[in-house]
Length: 194
Image 1 (cartoon, helix red, strand yellow):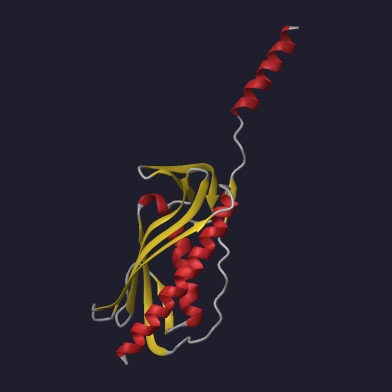
Image 2: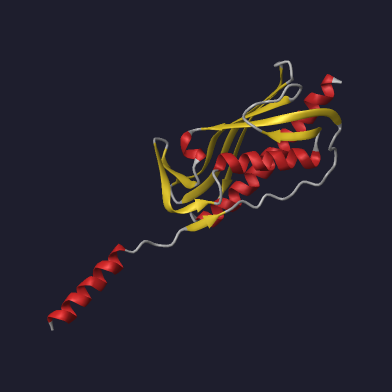
């Protein structure tokens, strides 16, 4: 009888200590069609900066303007800072206006520098309604260091529910719109330099 009690007790302890499985989410940003690639014989280097929590793969959600929570068992497939960098690199490589696009901490000589400051990549709740929120600032500088383009992108997308799959869907759309808007702004700024 004692042995059954010990085995049952041990099984209860093991069951209460088990952790739920980790879920991994990724973005699905549509690929850009090649339209104006190489329009200018220049190259650009991407540099992306973000606060510490956006440099980790944890999914963030804001419970109030003053409190941010990180999901323990749900994560992005890579940190948001890398998701944004790769999205911009892919968009600018496919649809220009540069002949070459790099992503590095150090900008090589003769390259334009596209500096991206990622401020928000998260879910926030207002009552029963949830939103995906993307906020970033972009500055394009010439090889000489002159600022030729600057823009702030703020995209807020209403979610169907609070699930992280819906957050991934909302932020995918927001990032796609944001990269397209910045791409068009850069093309206009570069055309003005001709």
